[in-house]
Length: 215
Ligand SMILES: [Zn+2]
Image (cartoon, helix red, strand yellow):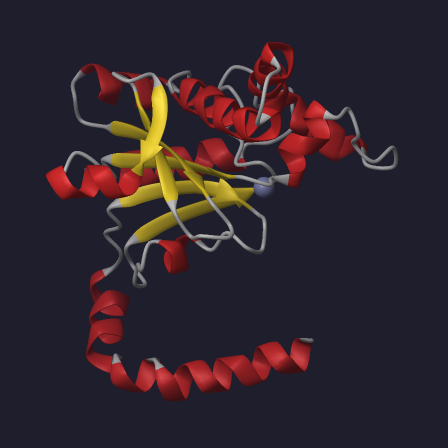
């Protein structure tokens, strides 16, 4: 496996770097100026740059199990500051104006919460996933069809709400300097659905790019 990765770097240098030398040199010397903070799941099938056709320098990325944003007031007690640090760096230092929380259908972390099936030898995972419980359980209690899909969607909404618990996020939201976006990615089709606050629903992204409202 590791040999494959190292050979992959060789291919990357031949196939990508060789043709993008000026672009990469400019990025290296001028620094990064990403357009969005992308908070996604660690799932190996959800690759932010791939699914958005983004180049190096365009996305500031955080990936963790179940695309979670621990509430600001709880993050210390939960022993995880990495998401908060990324939020403060992306927004405060880099001046990012968009934050995307991107879940995905078929998320194992969300399913574990809905089905109460976190591996017993994984106490940190169990603790981490308590942040996904409010959204996932709303979907589970509501029942009906597509419970797991709804749980994924509710979890994205929950993490968007958690973002606003960070003072830096709240302050910029209040003066209109920051926009939050909730997305869910479909592993099979590659499609995105996007949270629409007015419709109170996730709608196909394709319809939004046509009129530019996807931002
Ligand atoms: Zn996932």
